[in-house]
Length: 351
Image 1: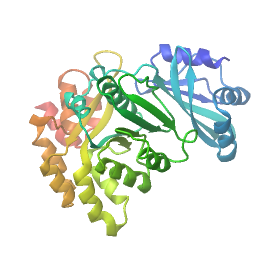
Image 2: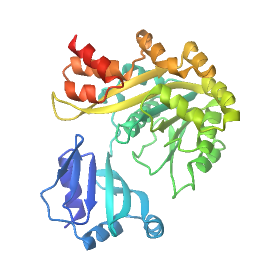
Image 3: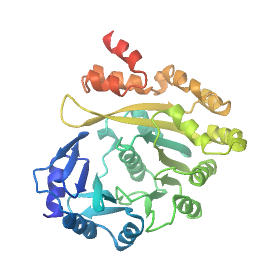
Image 4: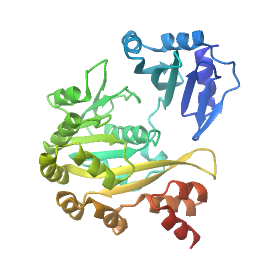
């Protein structure tokens, strides 16, 4: 069985993910649905061969040591893949997220217009959040590309692993990969601040040190973009604050209220009008009222501010879901299943 044949079939099926597991045929995720390919079952030996074909030497050594390894894999003329290799039932297995080689323009992503406006910010912290597979990386890549085509600035990305590969246009872009180019996000971010950047992309604010450095970078005049695995804006703010010891939380509330510019929370839906996916997006913009709520530990009131600020581009997740439903893009069942307040949305959709 040939690896590139599997990946080509997955690409042609518009799959987002490929799973290579011994004892099963190749399985792909197409618009959120797991679908086996009509191919032979992968043997233990074939799974190991695929791993050795894809993994760089350092990633393979990490796999042997830890039984898990993350790396990227590129197929010329096809796509890049974010790969997690792991052991299951004593055999190698791979989960591969496909990243198309061309960065999509923001206008092609069905995102709110306000997100394009965020690419004009001179400084501060912008967070794109959501579950795994919600399109965070694609949104951030499209934002970086928009700035790359407009400004003459220095952009540094810190990623695990590098996903979209940028070509420097008006900007100079450097992309650093965890493990290959830096030992940790925190280390990469600390040193990035000495590399004369204007814009910094941090793949994920996954620990206190990285989060603190990202906020400090935003405080000192940089535009910092990053992600968190949170599902809405108020939860995002609380997650950041909860990373800190209790005695520092008042201070971080003050710092975050000054530096945070926006939180974009995405949820992907399968379309019913045509094949494909479409995002529902909760959008929080940090107005003076929002900054006061963060500073005064009243983040539970953020949804109310979002609800009453639609005229400036804010939107709750449920209002975004309702709009997708009324436009005929998603089913009623999916809308209610992924709503923040299902009962309330169900009444709204029935009205």
